[in-house]
Amino acid sequence: MSDARYERSRSAVHEAVCSVLVEQGLGGLTVDRLSAESGISRSTIYRNWPDMAALACEVFDELVHRDDVSAELDTAETLRSYLVDYARRLNDPTYLAVLVALIDGSSRDAAFADVHRRMFSQTRSRAGALVRRGQQVGVIDPARDVQQCVEDLVAPFLYRRLVTQTRITPAHIAALHADLLGRWAR
Amino acid sequence: MSDARYERSRSAVHEAVCSVLVEQGLGGLTVDRLSAESGISRSTIYRNWPDMAALACEVFDELVHRDDVSAELDTAETLRSYLVDYARRLNDPTYLAVLVALIDGSSRDAAFADVHRRMFSQTRSRAGALVRRGQQVGVIDPARDVQQCVEDLVAPFLYRRLVTQTRITPAHIAALHADLLGRWAR
Image 1 (cartoon, rainbow over the protein chains, first blue to last red):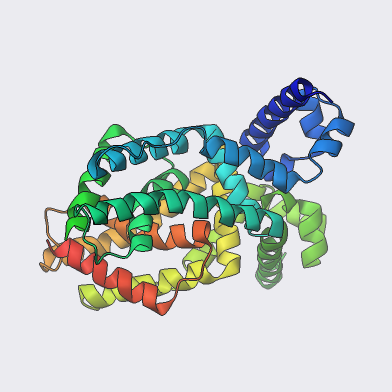
Image 2: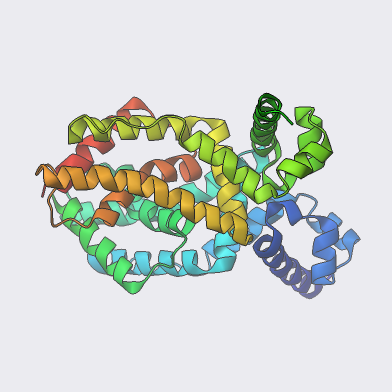
């Protein structure tokens, strides 16, 4: 298959994964269903994406890394960008569906669990870099535990989307931003 | 069916729901599978639990309310009991599997979404009562938003179990307990 054809198939299959996860969750993710949804033949899907867990993770990876927060701003601005970006992703029903599928799958499937861990260690390392930079310039108390700060940063919006199932608003972003900077300064 | 027979069936079916959710997630929750797992006939299951969403929620309800935190202790002790109880539940693979199924199901199924909301508003009202009591006795700043305090309380452990997928240890409980009381006092 040429690069261009592969790219078209990949894009169609990735879109199909998103629709299936939004509509049916992980239980609906089969080669038959993906083939019907994407118009790509079952044999092409089997050949290129033999592992559904790896495929779901590939899609998630793409959603996560669509755009990165700039590292050029000061800590308060970098933190705001991070929160805005994170809220936008969590507010996206497709991103949320893929995230839930990943959480769901990783509780029973070692392949999912592996990629889940890898993903979240990437997300955390990005947030961790932000915190360490803040500590270097004195905006964040250097005695603060970096991993704890990362959890302070990512847990509230995730809880809101997964549990209270409300959208994250600009007011929530502003409140968490102010709260974190206040707490972390001490 | 006599009360005693109903009770036996109910208990067997509830146990089967837990096993299926741990092993296969929501996708595996069918009357056939529950019948095979519980030894209860399909017709009995159909007659008593025609709605799989309602059944999963019934099971979750039971897991959640197995034991309640006493309201007789002071704020710091009530908070500690709440955190210990909450950590114990989240550390339980069955509870976590049912919780993930509920989150998974409620993104696509209105019946799940309904009960999910009802459940979590119960959990939140229990935590909310704790916070309001703390405000009355002056341990928690009365200017603090109660719902925000509730989120401060429940989000971190949930994040840890769902995302970093590590167990909640006594050290985590002690750290969150101290952190919350420190933050809420101001």
